[in-house]
Image (cartoon, rainbow, N blue to C red; front, side, top):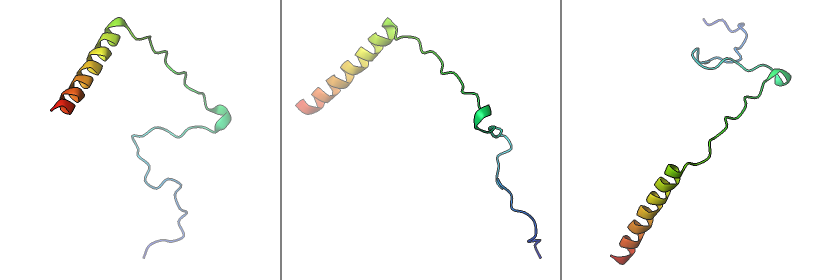
Length: 64
């Protein structure tokens, strides 16, 4: 028979390769958000090209 007097586990299926438990509230250190660089000219051109292709595809689909 199974031993039912054993205390229940708090986390019975904890992933051993997962993150360790976080400490309580006052000791948790917030990680700073990384600074994102502004969009470069190349990013803007790529975004404009994608937008143009999408608009052209929608237009061609409506005309057909």
